[in-house]
Image 1 (cartoon, protein in one colour):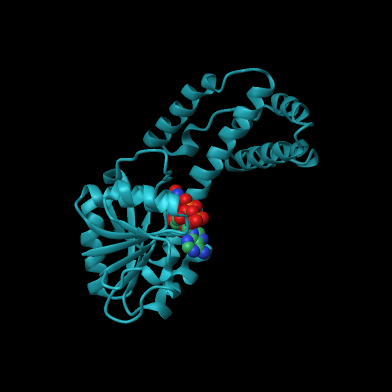
Image 2: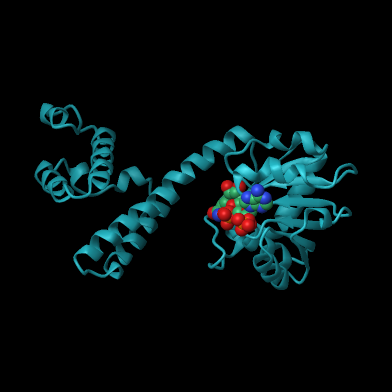
Length: 268
Ligand SMILES: NC(=O)c1ccc[n+]([C@@H]2O[C@H](COP(=O)([O-])OP(=O)(O)OC[C@H]3O[C@@H](n4cnc5c(N)ncnc54)[C@H](OP(=O)(O)O)[C@@H]3O)[C@@H](O)[C@H]2O)c1
């Protein structure tokens, strides 16, 4: 299967390298930046172009690893006709967005946080696939199975729900790490101090339901500590709002909200 990879960012890089390692035939990279496209093409030992008119017309598969908002625009510039297949890699974009551009299309969504600068063992990455016909789904399943041991068929609706959950457990959690890092920096403390805690929290989530192993002042109903923390956050109003919302939700989930009217009156 001759593949053209569109995009030179995080997913194009990691997916491209995973496919290349499995001897997939990537024949060309298309990117807007010559520097990025040539660098990725060198790693994948293929050609590259930055010109739409030079995108190869004889590929079997075009993988659009581009920003969500660019999917339709980029699909529109691909060669028309033939039975070539187009895929996108987004979590929250319905498969149907590709319908106007080809009679063969689908989605290959890697459910992992991928970064250009971080190597990853793709065989452990769940790959969620969807296609517009059973035969395209089969082709996609075969391709996905070359790079991942966990290939799952899910529809666009399920995928956007998975993506939403992924934003909570990955993107938001990482943002909380960034807040922790910034807050320690203000006190000249090293973020390394928190790293074992981050690791242990993630390991517990592997073994138990996260709700069962929740710790901290909110789940213990420790109002004194919560009040102190909120006072400490006066100079960071956004962090304070996040702290309040999180604490309120933990209190609610643990059944503590409503037991003492003071939680309600103080805004938690
Ligand atoms: N990163 C993840 O963890 C992850 C995981 C699963 C799925 N995804 C999905 O995979 C897709 C790509 O994400 P990413 O993280 O790889 O993004 P990224 O690193 O920001 O890369 C986006 C790529 O799209 C290109 N692009 C943007 N607008 C374009 C346009 N109008 N025409 C042509 N190319 C354009 C960018 O080119 P320039 O470099 O020139 O701007 C870049 O090569 C997204 O749909 C995302 O939702 C991401």
